[in-house]
Length: 204
Image (cartoon, rainbow, N blue to C red; front, side, top):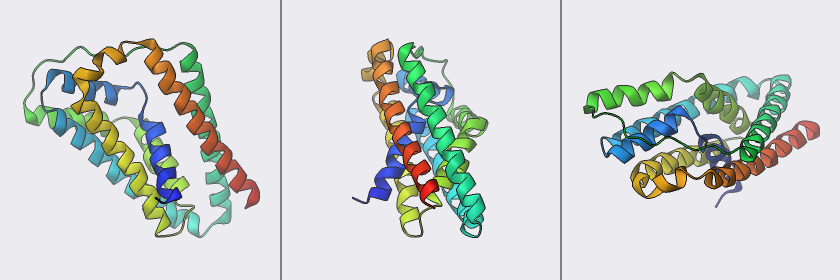
């Protein structure tokens, strides 16, 4: 398996596995057993489109400018380091995720709600278009495609696993120790990737 694919998989997974409104909504729909797969599909497809747009747009921008490439590397490294620090702090004071099922809704409302959680959150653009786009754009094609495929795979695996296994996972989400482990793993992955980006910026 390509190392670039694994980089995209680990970075995408590290960004997506966090307590947040989108994950809480997918989990809630899974617990309620109402349009869980539709919700997961919409969230994952939105991520895929934004990741692809980021790889295409950031790639075009960075390819012709060593200065922008260096800025993207240092900016990405700084953001990943901050993300790692935030995850480490969260591990010291782990929380839980509220899993109470929401009220019933039709598929149209479920579709609109999933789109809202996916596209109306500014952080999703920072994570997918800017961060994943700038990191992936440092690889030439077809390696850039492998990176994007890895990040997209992480999104699909996470959302469908969350929706499909909601009932089995519900007791775990109520345990602070579970989130402490998730946050520690996230911090390690983000810190490693930040160090790699900074090393590339120094070497470039």
